[in-house]
Picture 1: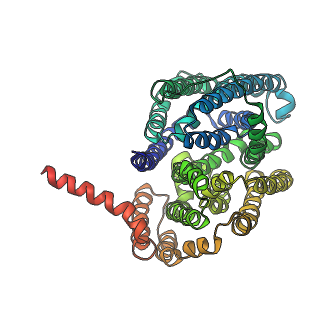
Picture 2: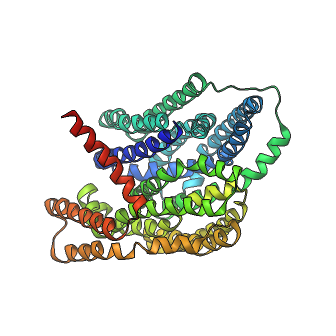
Picture 3: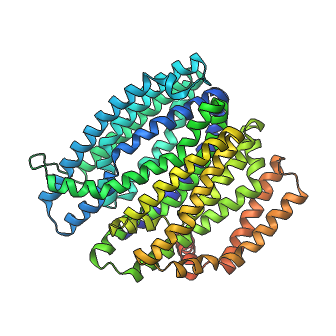
Length: 509
């Protein structure tokens, strides 16, 4: 059953991702036209500030996974109930702290956002911040239930709920925008939808998974141990916020909401890019923790690490190369010439982040081994460097300059330092990993050549040309990857389900 959950969870993750992209492509240009560039930028700016309160979860979600699986192996139900109770208390208190902190921020929007915003924008920012803070605060207790579902590998339910949320969201938001309620109405109905989803997670855990809570024996010794473990994850969360949200904040202070809107669109494309890579690795998190708990075999961990990384590279190289060759006409056709600069920004974001994305299961291996502290400190100093670079670059070159600062920090931190650490300290064979990745180079020659020729000879700003040559590029990439890139395991991932599907269709006839 667990294997089926794993496979079904991975398939549903990508189906959900496909649905998300389809909704995003159809919904975003409509939403942008209804909101306007300035208000979309204001929403991104406020959301980037509220996102910093998200670090208050302190990384306890990963700690829950670690200790829950430890007690589950021992079948210690009493400890599990105590753990559940502790985490529900912790996250409820964190939610209350978030409300207090968010209220203080909302009362000081003029100080936070500076002089580039108009009085109307500052007033609206205050309302948006209050709604987003309440939504965030309520989401904290839900982390316990989401972590519990993941730890029990109930990926089918989790992914189905996510798909429902993705599909329903435009149908509840667009009427509100059409009626003229703007970003405030959009944020309000989205928050209501999020709360509904969180209630569904809690109900499933309690009713279906028989999740139980004990509040009688708060284990302070365990709390101290978890705090030490989670403190470094907290640093990672803070770093992620600096890397992915500080750019918008700086742009808002120096260039206003329109600059934030252009950068925000690129950042959203980058966020989907990250989600695609995470969809595979996320379903392997319980397996990593079990493997480390049972044997801590570095050879097996390297094989798993490499296998996942190769699959991620195949998918990400298709998307990133496609964006390089088709990204600019896509953005112009999709949302208009006002967002043309988003093309350069998104390339600066996605190309450097590809390195850590094909290695992101390594983060979970470090956590399972309790060796994630070094990464946290390295990323902390890299993030400070990013901040130091971004401020002057954003002042001079706007969103493009802000993206350069982020790109440099990602390349240094992930391309060099963390590969050394994974190889020398964690015990993963990174030479083997990169040898396996570089084996894809011959498979990339044909699609890259095709992309260059298509751009040179044809006008891709014509919709028919864009769609036609886009399909041709995907076909060339797929054939080349199948013939000279993919190994038998990767071919079987596609080939075996396809054969089964064809067999079933033939049997029906």
